[in-house]
Image (tube, rainbow, N blue to C red; front, side):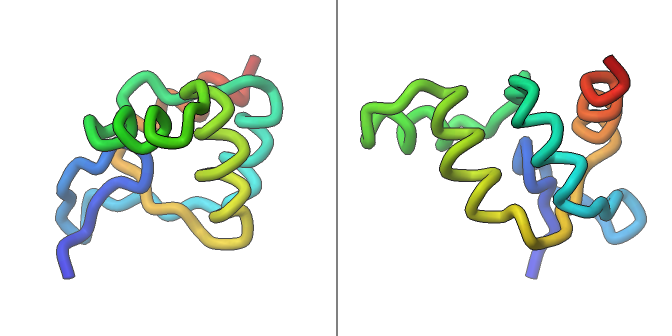
Length: 86
C-alpha cells in the first residue's frame, strides 16, 4: 500500500513519513488551523456536504481521526509545528 501524507496526500517513501500523535493535529485544529495544502479531492468532498473548508477539516476529518497517529510529509509537519508554536 502506498504511503501518503495524511494532510496533503503527497506520496512518500517510508523514510519520508513523520508519524505524530493525533493530539498535535487536534490541538491545532481547535485553535483554527486549516492546512494550506489540502489535496484537490478535498474541495469536492466539503462542497458535496455544503461545509466550509475550515468546518469540514476540523469537524469531520480531524475529529474522525482524533485517536489515530498521523503520517505527515516534512512540509505539512513544519506548517503544523509553526501553527502549534504560536
